[in-house]
Length: 112
Image (spheres, rainbow, N blue to C red):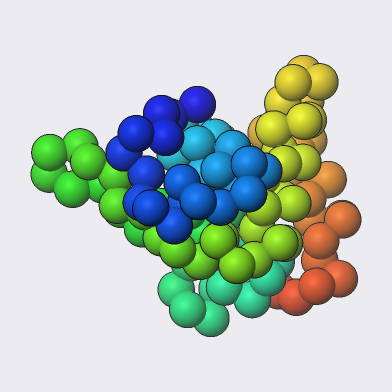
């Protein structure tokens, strides 16, 4: 988990579950870039659940946070499910399949 120290103020003041989701997403880009989101955020250019939290990393390696997940329970729920399933020993492919099956009812995947 990434430290809360570098997080924007609105993340620091968010509910704990949202803070944990930001911390996890930022610390696990290799996983989260493979996990889709189904909240409709693909329409605003987000390409994975990771991008609901992180819009980029600058040339100094500083994470640039996105505020989208602050107000989106689907993004946070997907991240919390990913965290839980990883702890259970599931592979990224198994997690992605679970996310697809569970959340596709809410909208299109943002991963082509």
